[in-house]
Amino acid sequence: MYKSSVKTVSAIGGQNPIPDKLFYKIGEVSRIADIEPYVLRYWETEFPFLKPRKNKSGQRVYVKKDLELILEIKRLLYQERYTIEGVRKRFGENTTFTKHPAPPEADKVVDTPLSDKIIEHVRKRLREILNSL
Image 1 (cartoon, rainbow, N blue to C red):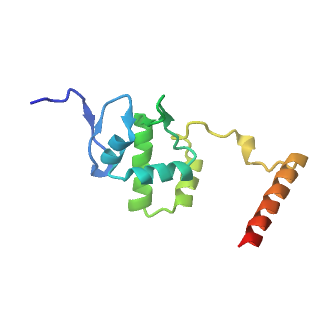
Image 2 (image 1 turned 45 degrees about the vertical axis):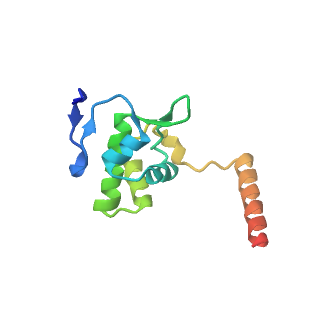
Image 3 (image 1 turned 135 degrees about the vertical axis):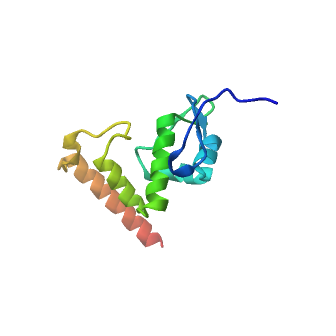
């Protein structure tokens, strides 16, 4: 019988153990975190700090830090009963998991002619959508 030579690290909150590997595919992450793959893909759209790399064939490739982040998001959502917005704010305050922390001046609203044009374009598109309903 084949025995894996992969070391394991205990997962947060009693989930399946985290194999000590360099990369994980979405199926492995799904199994370890006990979360469906479609939930992981959804979380990528909701949490800008969760961005796994993709390999040459376009498959998601997670690293251990991504997996730890997923387990923390799961804990906050399912055990601590945070909302998605609450998790976003929580990680906005604690940027230890963010891959590219925003510079401090990013919080300031910039009033430029370009931002006015963008806002006007968005308003126009929203009106068009509303009128088409």
